[in-house]
Amino acid sequence: MKLTPRLISAVLFVVAVLPVYSQVGPAATQGGLPITVGVGLSGFDPTNGSGLLLGGTLWIDYTPTQLPKILNGLGVEAEARDLSLNRSSSQPPNLRLDEASGGVIYSWRHIQNLRPYGKFLMGYGNIDSMAGSVRIHDSRTVTTLGGGVDYRVYRNIFVRGDYEYQFWPDYWKSTTPAGSLTPHGLTVGASYDFGYSRSR
Image (cartoon, rainbow, N blue to C red; front, side, top):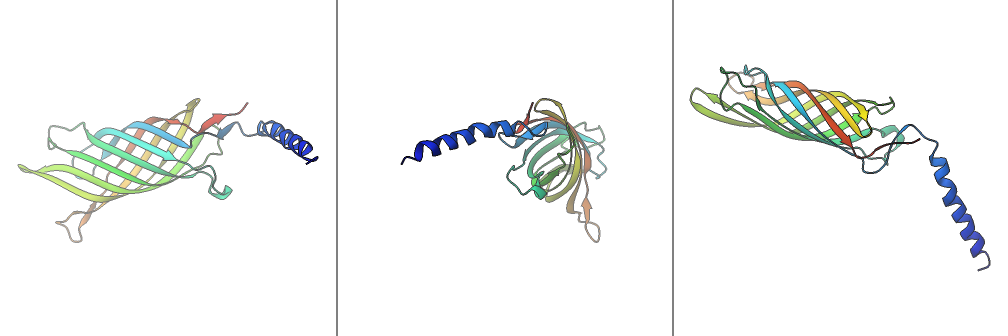
């Protein structure tokens, strides 16, 4: 029992000294909630002869901080998009493409203020169109390959430039074999990283 005050003093000393060591670190660190939420404007070519469609995109990234060092930067992304703007007069009046997907994202976080990334997503998509006077609604499992860059502009705020190439299988059923719809396009937007902080 006589050692208890000395032991408590030693523990308190170690606890007091730890923050000093934590001051020596990279300029950009992850702390707090490792979640990034963003919104953007997308322009996609559905590749079904309908021209460029515009719409909004929402994404949420979760990047765990307790992974082995070799996996640093690996996370998951959930994304939703609705494309129904910029229809030309020659396009169906109900033309719309929307989807929700999720998957893995890997960010290279070793460049100050710049985070290039690549991603692989799978999800569910819908397209509304017309054949003559008949309205058509079609749904498919969607596979997405993509990548881009996040650039820090101020504190926890990043801007994103993103490119995606999608596969909607068996869309053109009249062909043999059935052809795939392959929408592709760009998204530009901004996000807030709840886990980003800067040390002095």
